[in-house]
Amino acid sequence: MRLFRSIVVMTDSSPGPGLVVGRALRAALALAWVAAAAVTVAAAQEQGAPAAQAASSATVPLLQISGPIGPATADHIARGLQRAARERAPLVVLRIDTPGGLDSSTRQIVKDILASPVPVAAWVAPGGARAASAGAYIVYASHVAAMAPGTNLGAATPVQIGGLPGTQPPPQPAPGKPAPPRAPDDKASEPREGTDAVRPGADAMTRKLVNDSAAYLRSLAQMRGRNVDWADRAVRDGVSLSATEAQAQRVIDFIAADVASLLQQAHGRTVLMNDGAQRRLDVQGAQTAAVEADWRTKLLSIITEPTVAYLLLLLGIYGIYFELTTPGFGVPGVAGSISLLLGMFALQMLPVSYAGVALIVLGFVLLVAEALLPSFGALGIGGVIAFVIGSVMLIDTETAGFGIPIGLIASVAVLNVAFVFVVIRLAMKARSRPVVTGSEQMMGATGEIIEASADAAWMQVHSERWRVASSVPLHAGQRVRVIGRAGLVLRVEPEATPPPSVS
Image (cartoon, rainbow, N blue to C red; front, side, top):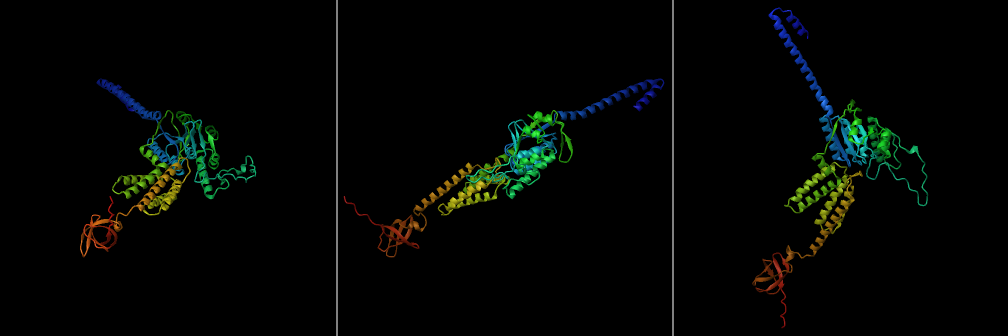
């Protein structure tokens, strides 16, 4: 600007022709200054446009947690959070409707949420949904917690074989005696935060399991500033809350009937990230996009279903068995190998009892031994018993959705019993059949003398030429029966000639 003014003054003071040149130069400089200002304004507008466009077109991924939580669910959530981080999403919404799930998968999801660079909002929806057991841990771990009307949350007591840890049935009165009275509102018997208060009768392992789970949920509540006392009771007492009660007791942040209401109430909230930084949620006008599970997650979900994993294991075992008993066919061996590998992969991701696996393998070995050894059913019956017990013990948890149906186990047991019955029946038939191979099959065989001399005689039997010996003279064309054998010489006797018929 100063240069422009000095040039203008200089050109105005120039006499004669210089005055014209100075005015032209001044006009050119003015036009250049206007053009530069226009370019600067346009550049500023272009720099501000992407930010405004990003704010108005932000996309919030919507991940679904439906049904029992297992390895496939954990994999789906992990991949969804990684994708949201790559796309710099302002928020991730987890829509939850689950009865619970595996402890290992739940803890993996919680770890992914805590380590996520993108804030996570847990939303128990739609109406009628629940976030029970494992779902409660995910809600507590999320940066924002919300529920739809008509939903419930809680019942976070861990489950193991033998029932709910820490829950023992009350002592029953003796026959003919009334039950002892119970003091109402016995506050002394209620567990307190951070204590080892577990119901009487629980063993050491149960106390350890309950205390560990309670401390885990309390730590999540403390991190997110939610109701710590209720988190402890949700584990120790298995209590649950409706959406309204959860909001009143500071278990969740708010109630949202739909996604739009969820984003509207979440906008402007400040959440604490894993690195200790405070982040203000900016989801005004954001759009949600449902993230569907890919083929890998769907395949993992199918094969990690306990029933499917159990059937894959059985198909693999029997496929390999039939391939070994009927070599050269190929199809049973290939299908059995693939099924066995898939079944073993699925089982190593599930809480499997290795004693159950060992009993199933032992039962199969005994069934094969029954088909090969003359045990008359002893090995087969033992194999069926081992197979059934191993199948019942295979999945080492009583978590909802992660058990093998008793009906399936019974069906497999019936098939094994039928297999043993067929094998025993075929063995008995085989024992009653005459011998058709070896030297024993020569006993009682009949043939014709084809050559006889003073030194030796020869006969034709079973299309073979044998040297024979007899205690009576033999002649060519005579029918004889084999009664013994001495090396390569058959002992024979003349075949009885039927008496002539009387006309």
